[in-house]
Image (cartoon, rainbow, N blue to C red; front, top):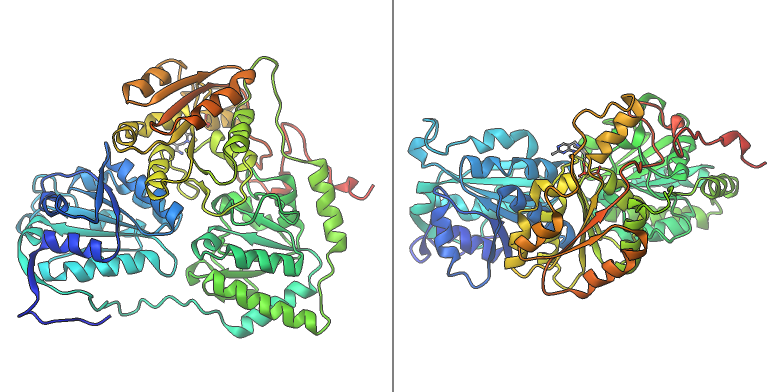
Length: 588
Ligand SMILES: Cc1ncc(C[n+]2csc(CCOP(=O)(O)OP(=O)(O)O)c2C)c(N)n1
């Protein structure tokens, strides 16, 4: 980008006007936020903007997760805005969340006036200091004339390379003073040059290993979605015939219905996916980070596997598991070049033979399919979630909170398309679901957006129902009401001798979710038995002029299976309670 005009001819704008203009120039259409003293100057020109639509949330955490949901659903940078001090610190959780899940987000915060910085001024918080370890980058803008460049750089950093959150903190006086406005701006980011093109030698080596291996697995992480590389993934998978597993952050990156898909790996992954990784001789990790929830006890993870690890972030490679073939690059370019190299190997007569591997994989998936128990007359939470997935279908977008319902939504909804499953994977942030659904719906108004939430999570951020009702954001929320902090209770059942310390929410009616929904201007529905499930979901599907909340009163003892207990080897996977898969039987 080059600088145009000069300071004599450039328009003089206040910092606040420059901020709004810069956001407009960057194509931002939606921002989520709450005003306050320090950011107030920016809210004034916002009123005149024809391009920016500001959605007034009820809590800054809602603004942050909404920006994340918007970004994950649209692929664009999500934007949230808050005032100094508590406004900014309320954004800390969503910033940490976006950092862990590599979501492109720009958080704009007002700061106390320059002269007050460091004096413990009213509503002062050092948000740059606080967010240093949870942002990709952050700026304290000290000169009005720097605002356009800082904003442009923030967007560039957030969206390129490994995406992530960037904070732009602007003192009140910097927003109020005037300076010439130049656009476009020249980015000044020495040292920031994300490598996107993979090294040819590594690609060839990876292709050679793929064709030589007998038990390969394509281990697909969220990076494939971030790189918008799902088409390329499909091509490589079909070209090689290798099995695919998709992590919690990559659900939807490869169609669940595809015969090469083994499902989700990890703590609550399918037996076939977990065991495939565990017994493989080659793991091709694509935009994945060998998270502890996937590897289980790291020292015993996939002991016989060589590892090809492709990631845009060099810091990820060999962080947890040593890579035999490290590939730094954008997953889309990696997958394209890898497919070309595999084609070359195949043309030279070298083709992997995975017949015996597929026999074992098919055996595991036939013997240990995902399933759940039902108690006569009681509503199984898995059934509710499964039916929502079936009725709303693969074009809907699903968000979740964190807990059992999140895992069931990952397991029992069939994801066929990318960007349809949004959740808080890395941070595991309760309260993510409702505001993320709001952001997703604001970004993709034509899509049906369901939030599958827990009754615990829902009580953390449901104030955004007001925002949704007032801003015509008709999301649908299924509260999986088991009267407990279910996932924690599950651990107490299994590992703390059924001593339920502080996980009982004590009432399924306080609050009454139907009345709560109505109080917020939404439609409230309740469902307590299996035979009402389809009708109530269909009723919710037919309502498009208001948000809908369904209180699904479900069985409290349902548990998430399979499970690899924390800290144990993936070899210790339990298909169901007390049920260790018997791998010795294979082939019999
Ligand atoms: C902000 C936050 N606090 C605490 C936790 C720990 N935690 C993980 S799951 C969970 C229970 C969630 O309960 P609920 O929303 O009812 O979902 P369920 O597991 O019952 O489906 C808790 C407390 C967390 N992940 N995030």
